[in-house]
Image 1: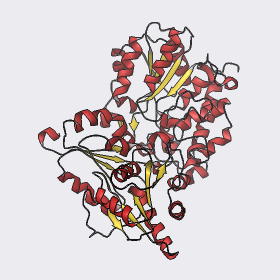
Image 2: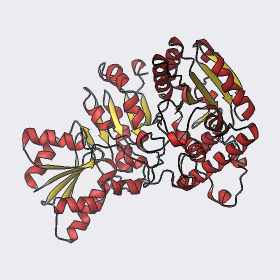
Image 3: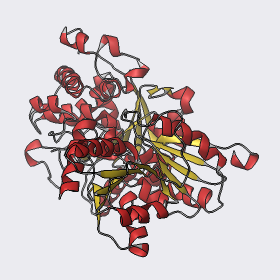
Image 4: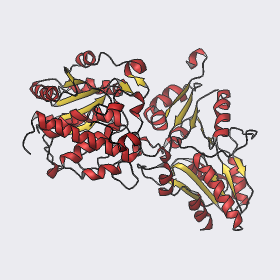
Length: 242
Length: 271
């Protein structure tokens, strides 16, 4: 379709969109640099009861390594509405990661976003929590709770994982005492790894990566799984206080 | 266990259906329709056809079964539980965080499951490997693989089908659960796999068409498959999604809908 001028948006479960079709994405989309948008839905453990086979925890990692590919992962309805249209303006392959679980609305409809620029929320100096996708709202809740205890952190919604906002990551590492990353994805190869790559090259900083720790998911309710894999507000608070 | 007769098998199939309903009701999610459509086939396999023994779970000489349509896990779990691999009561915990009964079959967590499945299209490839290995080692093991009719839209199935006949895997028996419905609608409208029997035939299979809810026909088809030499067999079983539960039969949306609480509580089903 792209050959004849349409922009294909292909969508299915993230596990199939990026896993099953990896070779085709690599050799028939990224290598020829075709203008194809891939929307992987039902990403992460929050798929819930379907269990490990359907819980994609490696898609950011797989897509991020491919030349020409851009990788985005949105955190709420407003941001997703923006990004679906915005990526049509990019001439080249894009992977958009979405989840199944209903997430709270974070942004006002007038919020401005830019591809490749993380959204900094708050300006606390005690820690930066860099989050992507469904767990951004948990990081914001943690920020608000900690504020009442006199601990001031900031949250970065890193909706673009590639190209990542190097400038913002380095700025936060310089301005805050701690860097924590969190994602509903493996800590290997995802947001956490991407942040570590930037900091190790530009401003060596200790980074704590929260996410799925080199294991497959399992069946359960989405809320229970977020708790089981330690991806909730309380887990972030605990990590900030360590 | 004494070989079950037709009447006993029918009763067993009913028990398997009750287990499916309880499991999906307990999970409040999952795939009752595609589980009920293959309940009779699984019952015949585990209560008559296959050389298996729940007391010798990992016995190397046992026949193997691959549930390629892994989302019918409730049917496999209920069959295994009723066959004595584990407690029938545990079916109620399907898909719960603390349960070993995952949404899709996990061979490392669930007694009696020969292969972890769930990502559609891959089971026949694995069954080929099992059947080929048995032939290479002259082990005399038969391998059964249940495919969904929506699932055979996956290209890998046909690469695997070519492989089955290339290696003359006459110890392999494929069953297609042809309930005619997949998650997005009728298979013929989504991406028609028809004619299924002709396709398998042209890929080198011996094919048998049966009514997948007629226990006698299922038994006879498996008997026939064992006599076929030099090629694999594909049994195309015409089935009804949700078979055995009046308000579930032939419902597309049941593909992912859990059982309706009120009707189940009222016992308003005829399993």
